[in-house]
Length: 257
Length: 257
DNA sequence: CCTCCAAAAAATGTGCACATTATGCATCGT
DNA sequence: ACGATGCATAATGTGCACATTTTTTGGAGG
Image (cartoon, rainbow over all chains, first blue to last red; front, side):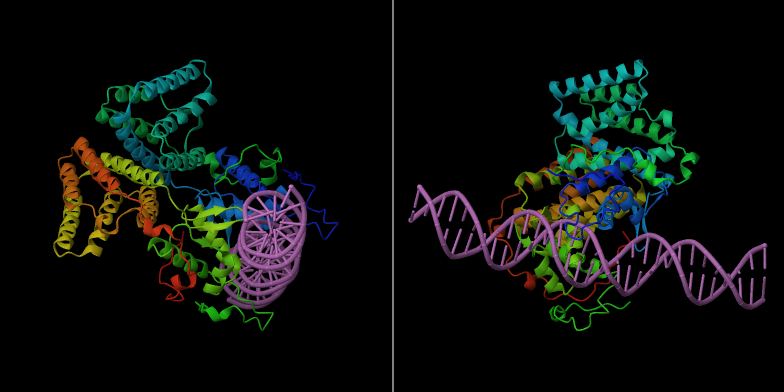
């Protein structure tokens, strides 16, 4: 498992024409994860141009490797690819964001329609436990944990069906709305009210599909209603090198695709 | 709009070292569509190995171009990519197929939950018109049209919401089940019963979500219940050249991605 | 001073050569 | 005779050089 570190000092070391840096199975993944993470954490503002050559220097890898990763992110709709003009961080319309939220809302309604048929004590207990966690985080004022747990609730719901297809769909949706949130959502308000999550679970306990869907819908409309254009995020990121500065050679993760 | 034809006789013509065949914006798309179409039409049986070099010869393009297309299809989960071992047409498990169908079912339940809130005369009229088409095709015994219209019904339902995200999700799902169907579904039976479609529309007319979801669910379970392993499709395709034989240089289609 | 245009500079796209990895096959050993 | 092993062959992965396209720049004309 040899893996070259990619400190910024690698670029110029081409002393030997042979032994070019080839055969790196996991380096693609490292670069991919680094850029994806920067996107999800909102370090890359909307509209930022991601040129191939600078990124290649920053990561200390060849341009084609960056190129491949960029195109992959484009295929996943996380970057906007324009032929002959490179990759940019998408600048979603308010309507785009609404569409993603609506899609999530619709998907969750479908999930609920299945869940009311499959509800059992085990699942209920798990959801209750999650609600308790959420309440605890809210009570002690842990904002970061609240945001994280709030999103995790919806993930729990789909995962309960045990269908990888559906879980993946929601994952894509969430990752995209995460990016969008950094542009449109007032930072402090992005927490779902725990009461609403509790109401959904209560409706599921009663196997009341109509109520569950209604509550879920209302819940999403609340979140959607809070969407505002964040003017601060209008300016693209300038210093790309700073964004990817403190990054380790490789994260233990590995996905077999 | 110059576009080289890709007859099989191009491979060897490297007389001039300069003027290498570069800058072809739409050729990727042509190859992509050709392979995708072959997949959807079931010409490529499950388990078939898609090697880069032979495909490059067949299409008369460079290997890297084939390579890019193959990886794109892999990212879309339409091909199974194994590192250092190339691309194969996936051989889905019966459980895989069931998962896709279940995902479709869940998604449609969500769509219905939105539709009951948005139902109006215009939409109802459109759905009724579609049902009429389906019945007409069934009465005159047009099997091809029946299959096509039967699938189109579900597409109509999502499209009615006007959310591109949701439409795209269903599109992906359908295209994947199309491939799977060729392996698992007895050819003649893949038609949804019109009565069931009609029952869904009737429930929508009454804005009865519970009934609509129940009917839709039942409808999908019928289809899922008919899934059988088709042993004939077990053998991989041998002659790749034959599959892509009668193909024109370019199809009028063009997608801006 | 602004606009328009052409040439230079930079960035993206692509074929090619070669490294690396997998596979088929003959040979050897038990 | 059968399985393991090493070599030859084929297939995939990658850096590089260069073509093409886009963007920037600098200057001429209105």
